[in-house]
Length: 167
Image (tube, rainbow, N blue to C red; front, side, top):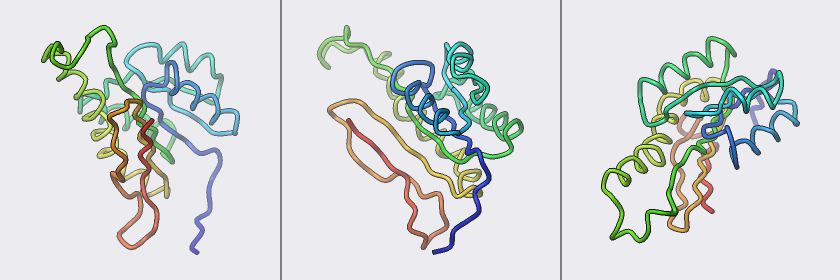
């Protein structure tokens, strides 16, 4: 096995990290000695402040490719590396009712954040993650999720895969 030296602390960008599951993941990574980038469209500043010096905020709209590119460039400029990406950002509205009542505009926004956002972050983070030997974790919390491997952070032939967690 070819072990790469790991400089500490590891840096992980977590989308949707201002609250809920994303904030819990960020809190755990900080407790384990890591550095986290708390990425969210709102609440990133307060969440990062609550986590302390090992966290920094990033206001990020995962559905906007320019925002994703700029956000990742900022992370690399500030942190100098990216070891992990947790695609956790997601939206839903339990008030929308059954699918036959769902407004098309809501549907398209959900797809843009919940699906396209994970794709855009992975697409633009993969070069830095490959350099660091890092990983991607995609999180979905819907009963309709499908478990799939979305990308490898290693060159072809290495046995490192991205992980998709469906709940």
